[in-house]
Each structure stands twice: as structure tokens, then as C-alpha cells.
Image 1: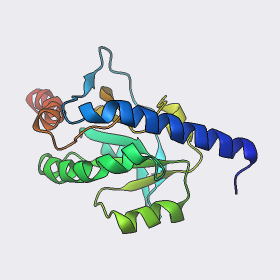
Image 2: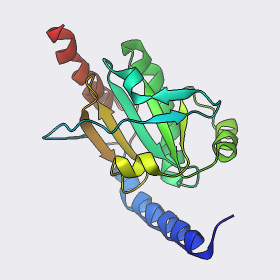
Image 3: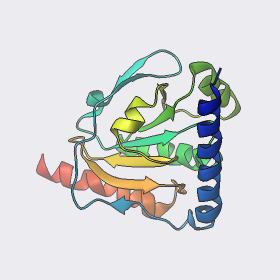
Image 4: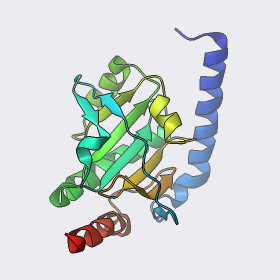
Amino acid sequence: MFTKKEALIYLITALLVSLLFISTNAYSSSKKLTPLKFHPVAPEFILDDIYGRQHALADYRGRVVVVNFWATWCSPCRAEMPSMQRAANWLAKYNIPVLAVGVGETRDRVQNFHQSMPVTFPLLLDTKSEVMEAWAARSLPTTYVLDGEGRIYYLAIGTREWDNPSILKQIISIQQPMKASK
């Protein structure tokens, strides 16, 4: 399944992510999103979800979008999923989708995760980690919030309590200028 080198890289990555989680998790509930000074356009992608349906980032133009990079082996990623589901439920009122991009894993593995933690937002498959690389995400979880033009507006490296009212307010605040300009 894995070569020795891949297994070692996987183990080291999991250890580093776990250490990051331990050092930052105590503060995750109070952490907000990091606003970017410049708003680069997010790299396009077309990915299958766990049901085989394709999702193109371009299909979400005109809407604020939350894009989360995660993996089933990443305990911080799994820890934030329930709050992300609550946030997705709340953000749906504003037509703001949440997309979770599973990095470097098979459909079966992500489907098994989904059985143990059913979420209603799309679980997309970046099996070769190409999208994560294109987006320059260096650790998991990493989450981007895009404005309606597909520009990266906010960044979150590490866990968050996604249903925290201050975070939800940050996300919907991007939508306000878009509505005013139409």
C-alpha cells in the first residue's frame, strides 16, 4: 500500500499535525479567521465527492465559499468536523456552502469516515494532494474563505470552532459588500 518512504512521511506528518493540534487546540474556540491583505484568486479545481459527483470551484462563483482541507487520519481535522457541520447548517441560510477537501486518501477511506461522522456538506477527494499543493496549504486542517469572485479573503490554519458567532460573522461579512454592489 505505502512504500517505506511514504509511510515515514505519513507518520512524520501525522506526528507534526498532532503536535500542532496539542499546542493550538486550547485556543481554537477563541481564534478568529486571519484576514488577508491581498486577495489572490483561488486555484480552480474539479473534484469528485464521495458519491462520484463532480464539483467545480467555478460552479460556486457569485457565492462566498468555505473550503476546508482535511484528512481522516488528522485528529484536529476530525475534532473540528462537528462544529463545521453546525456552521454549514447556519451558513446555508445565507447560501454559503462548505466544501471539505479530503487530502491524499481513497474514496473508501473517506466514505468510512462519513459513516462514523455523517456530515451534509460535500466531502471532495483530492487523492493525489494536487489541489492542496496548488492552494499552498502546508498543514491540516487549513481552511480558506472565498468571496463571490473566487478570491481568498480569510485563512485559518489549524482548528477552529466554526460555529463560533465571531467566525460566522466574519464569513457572512464578505457577502455584505457583494450584495451592496449588485
